[in-house]
Each structure stands twice: as C-alpha cells, then as structure tokens.
Image (cartoon, rainbow, N blue to C red):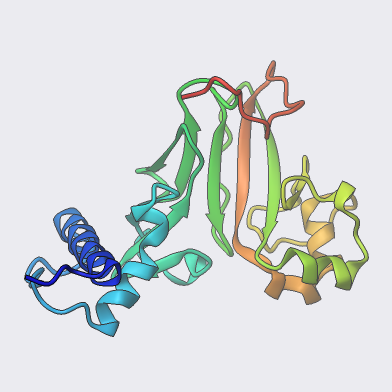
Length: 221
C-alpha cells in the first residue's frame, strides 16, 4: 500500500483543524448551527475562518455589536451581529448593560483596577466613576501614514496611539479646548481615515501609578 506523501498528510491535518474551528464557531453561535462540518472547505468557509482567526488564536474576544451601533463599531471585524475586540494576555472583555459599550479589565498584574472603555465614534461617553482619573487614547490603523502626514515622531506616539487627559464635550467628535483630545481632532481631522473607529477611554484609580502601564509583568499568567 503506497505511503501518503507529507503534503497529503499536511492537507488532511489542515482539513481536520478547519473542521474543528468551524465546530467551535458553530457551537459558540457565531455561524449557522446547520452547517455541515463534513462538507468541503469552500472559499466561503475559508473566508469565515480567516475572518475569525484573531478569535480562534486567542488574540480577540467576540461580543455582540451594541444594538443600533453597527456603524459606530465598524473599526472592529463585525459579522452577523458580532464583533471581534483585540485583547492581550490576562484581559477580560465585557459589555456594560446600561450603556452597551464594551470594556476591558484585568484581574491581576499591571492594569488591575483600570477600566478601559471602547467607545465608538459619535457615541456618548460613559459616566466616569468617582475616585478615578480618565485618559483618552486614539489608536491608528495606519500609523506610518499618519506620521508622514503630521511629521510626528515615535516619541509622541506611545504604543501605537496618542493619549490625552482632557476632553471637551460629551462625544468623540466634540470641538473646542486647547491641548485636549477635541483640539487634536480639529487640527488633524484630515487624517480621520488613519484612525481606528473607536476611542480607548481609561478610568484609573486616583492613586494608580500610570508610569510603565503598557508594560506587562513578566510573571503574569
């Protein structure tokens, strides 16, 4: 009996893995429960698997798109009413029941006690908890393009974003205020296409040391 080539064996493993991933997506409710897992790996199925790759590899969490807010969260990979939110090791993603806005928290290590809201464009800011300080961070989907347009160096852009401690107005698009997020947006509004379609709004406890906040502890599990 002829032996299977390494290429054939690898293809069979890919098919098995793909079927296991499709089953995982089906059981989670992200794709139709009537999908035939024994069917061929069609281009449509490959597209679904590629779309959900961040979730399948543990680099994102899938949550429902807030009702009526599909446009506000178009910066996330959304499909069939669900969106993928990037996460790092140790982060938990939840949806606030009152506002419908997703937020990140950490149970331990650097970032414990910090609540990071992910606010879509034109959405109202969530209420700030008492005893906290608030920071606003813009992230960029095309950082190099933004740098070329604005001549901003790496030192001014921390961890792929730029942060502000002041916000003038109640929504992401509000105007006014020198040295604030709103003033920055007014000055660089021609670069909107390079920004992510959401704003990170972090609430820190007043006594929290934000120095080195983006650096994770080496022993964090």
